[in-house]
Length: 108
Image (cartoon, rainbow, N blue to C red):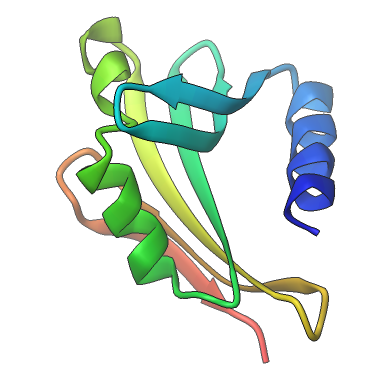
């Protein structure tokens, strides 16, 4: 299920002219999706039957965004929660470089 969701995100962001990398390796793990546009870099962590808080905590604890900080583009972290039962995204949160919630949506 996670691979299928990752593939769908890859296709969507590719169509939006973003450079998309999946399962990007770092010293401490792998970021699920990294999207690079002209002005921005988005680091996405997807969690199945888990919380966006845990997804965002993993981005920080594993240092997934660190390699992009010196790039000059705005780095945004995105936590995504997926329900295996509903087979869809149930909650996502976007956090800016300062750690402030930039956007969030929950689905019932």
